[in-house]
Length: 197
Ligand SMILES: Nc1nc2c(ncn2[C@@H]2O[C@H](COP(=O)(O)OP(=O)(O)OP(=O)(O)O)[C@@H](O)[C@H]2O)c(=O)[nH]1
Ligand SMILES: [Mg+2]
Image 1 (cartoon, rainbow, N blue to C red):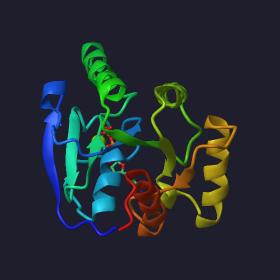
Image 2 (image 1 turned 90 degrees about the vertical axis):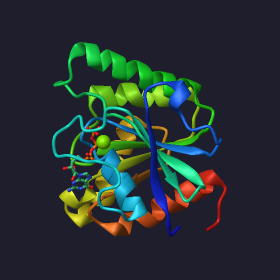
Image 3 (image 1 turned 60 degrees about the vertical axis):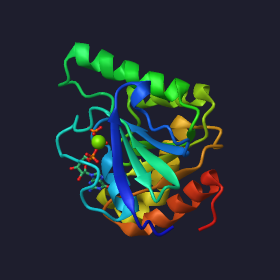
Image 4 (image 1 turned 135 degrees about the vertical axis):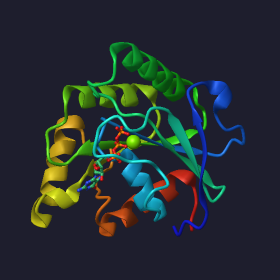
């Protein structure tokens, strides 16, 4: 898909602030600093639309990006960010959980994990949460540019085996630094949006 007119629409912390036009939503989930905001920028070919940082904890609200009036990419704050105060972690955890458990517009969760490491205990918790939510999802093993090209497929499979031993959840490598991985992810997205663009 060639994105023509992506727009930041709104930051929300409660339901009354969510968009009301009923467009389907594709949500980025994963630990802090794994590359959720960078993923959005790479997919829409804009360097800075979604704010990113080398410091974890950049995204603090639910950010809705309107993609050509076809769907939203929804950027969530990451988990496991220890510098956030306990009080703020609880607050953020609550509004994320509210969003994920109530929002009917969600048609796909994109769950990002770091290809360089085994999934963290929080990744396993999030994986179980997503499975129980019943929302369709895919796993992306991100930062694939950080390991040797020849190891990417094998490492991605190994992470899938840990999170999803049955092997029924599509698991693909991704890199915000390297466009070659984007095409397969667009195919997945288009399938879930029932689009053929
Ligand atoms: N090498 C490499 N770096 C990446 C990739 N994706 C993200 N990064 C870097 O990782 C850091 C964190 O990226 P973000 O996109 O801000 O991460 P996030 O998941 O949105 O983080 P929070 O908003 O804190 O939850 C930035 O320095 C990015 O440049 C990738 O695929 N490869
Ligand atoms: Mg972010």
